[in-house]
Length: 419
Image (tube, rainbow, N blue to C red; front, side):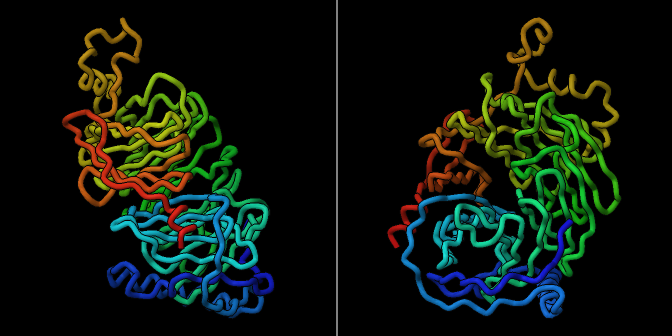
């Protein structure tokens, strides 16, 4: 279990190559969300003022440290794909996706390795976890950072290394090797904890737009996924694959789940309401390590990246407004496969491979780095991030079935070294 404990003696704070992320740069939230963020800050500050809890660090000095990044630890998009953040051996940097540009960076003068950095949409709230030979913070600590004030406003400390963090406007989710903790963002009170199978990759997703939060994480067995509906206090276990789960994604509304196993050949789409298998698509015939799975905001498209050097986009045929009907349809899995494959008339005669659903668009990735994907705000566009520093925007035409068209490409590691 975590504790909100006193922070260590003040560390050297990040120097900046830009002013703080001031309010004009924060996304225009509605009044309810603005009040939530204000409440969060006040509640955390109240914790900080308690000498038994934690102490605020002084604001950092401004200026620019001439440092070159030698190691990139983490790349991650924010919740709506409007920004991405990188964690390096120097600190963190945040970029806008459209238009592509660096928004700000926070570099630490005493090393400053950051292995996990998560944004809360485009707000001033971020979370850090240290990493590397010279981590800025211990790997068992989650640092809650207010970039408007340029200071740490809270800390969660654990008994083992933090594997991942997920944020909503009302909660913070911390993933350990075999346990997940969910905290109320307003006061950092623990509201729920979940035990999982060994989860070194920190797999976990939580819905963003649903009024009732839906959380998905590994279950207690290989191939099993756990789905928690917090408002209704329902838990559903889905046996998605025969082998260990490698990656999964949750739709923005939290009603559809896509999973991939360590085999990496098939992607399965399930209803989170009752665990019904809604669709199955095929990435390829050879085994692959799936690096990223992502829904578009309407759950019409699904993007998948892997170590095979290709990003695939699949058309989804999920009737989100009529899931009750699909639950009452007998042999739904077989009915869906029969309706979706031109070779279904010989199903059972030829291997399943020949009746599979394939991607409608592909993109060949440069090099052999690890890439993650999300959908852009422009229709039929995809954003791709690589651990080699690549930022790629491409466009797909679902009617043609051809290769995607590259619209722009940048390397944020080279641009940082040039500054």
